[in-house]
Image 1: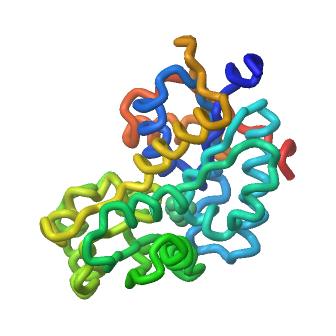
Image 2: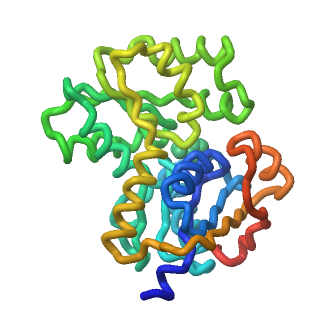
Length: 269
Ligand code: DGL
C-alpha cells in the first residue's frame, strides 16, 4: 500500500491545455508527484472522429501506466467524452475525468436547473455532458454549444483581447436563460474573464479543472492513496517538440517546475 501511495499521479491531455488541470492538482495536492503527458503530436482531438480519439485515449493511459502511476486524470474533455466511463474504468487504477467532476459541480451550483455546456465539436457532439448532468439531475435543461475557435485563441495567447470578446459574444450571445455554464474544455479557464464579462453575473462558471482536482483528492482519500510526504516532483512528456512544449508551457503555467521529455511513442502504439 505505502509503495502505491508514493507513486505519481498521471495526467494527460491532447496537448498543453491540460496544464490548467495540473495547476489545480498541484495547488490542492502539493505532496503528490505528477507525470503529465501532452499528446501535442496528434492534437487537436476536438476535431477528430470518435473512434480515433477513443484509440488515442487508450494509448495515452497506457503510456502513463508505463510510468507507474497510481491514478490517472483525464484532463482532456474530448478524450473523456469519446472514451466513456466503461473504458476509463477498465485500466486497473482509479481514473478521474473532467466530465464527471464538472457535471457534479454544475448540479451543485445551479438554482434554476438551466445549465449551459461549452466544449469542442467532438465533446458537444458526443452529448456526454447532457447525459452526465441529466443522470444527476433529471429535471434540468441543458444547452450545449461547440466553441471551436476558443482553443486556437487561447493557444495564441489572446486571452482577453477585442477579437476574443467578439468571438465569445457570437458564440454565447444566444445561449439563453442559463444560470450555470460548464467550461467543458481544458483551454477555456483562460477565457474565464471574457466569458464572465459576456454572460454577466447571473451565470456561474464551472471550471472543470478545479472540479476534477477536488474529485481526485476525494478519490485518493477513499482509495487510501493520498500521499502525505513532501517530496513531490513533476515530469512532463510530449509527443511533439520538447522545446515547443517548454515555450507554450511557460505561457500556460508560468514556471513548469519540472523537466520536459520526448515521449517514447513506441511504448503506446
Ligand atoms: N483538450 C481538448 C479538450 O479539453 C481541447 C483541445 C483539443 O481539441 O485537442 O476538449
